Amino acid sequence: MDALLPILLLLILNLAVLSVQGLQAKYIWRSFKLLLWFFIPTILMQGLFTPGMMVQQPIYLPLSIEGLMRGFYLSIHIAVMFFAALVVFRIFTKEEWLHFFRHLPYATALMPYVFLLFTLKRDVQNILFVQKKEWQHSQSKWKQLPNFLVDSIHAVLNVSKQAAAELWQDWDNTFAQSMAQSTSVIEEKLVLYVSFLVMGWVVFYL
Image (tube, rainbow, N blue to C red; front, side, top):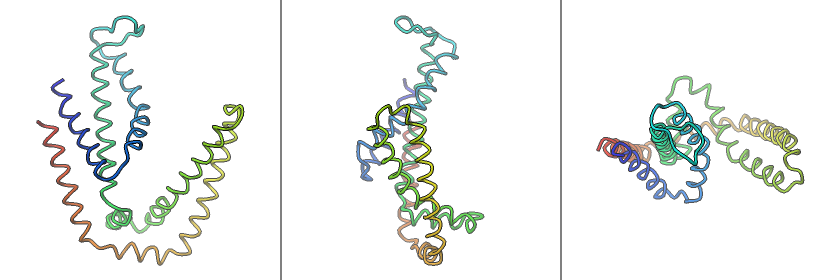
């Protein structure tokens, strides 16, 4: 329990920073539900294959208490890494991330793909949201699931082709705007980011 307390405090710190950044509680809760797909297999695998005292009834699986605790501990670590990454990505804007990216090796060749990803993020989310709503309100939806998946793939491909064509036509202006990003704000946010990392490691090693 003593080893679990620092990592729980670090998780709370991440969630507090996300709240200060303006992330709504419903999005944090949605992220936790997505992380369950990582938590459940991790806890079960650790519980099944870690030696120790077996859990008694009413659980009829060979799960050890030590394994379940270890799986829970690893799951908390996964949550901390996920939300810490979310904090970092929300500290900087899209333009600031592009400014950093320009200084990486092979950045010139990869820049069009990065711009395209930023553009498609919103459009693809909207397409998948609409397809999901239509699928949920359809009759015999499980039989219709393959058709909806194929339609979603075609819709995403069509949007991607259109976005790539528009990016190519306006590439000079888009690239020039990314080059004009000021570094003063970035440096201030970088100080905030480093301070957050220092606080996180201090809490972790308390």
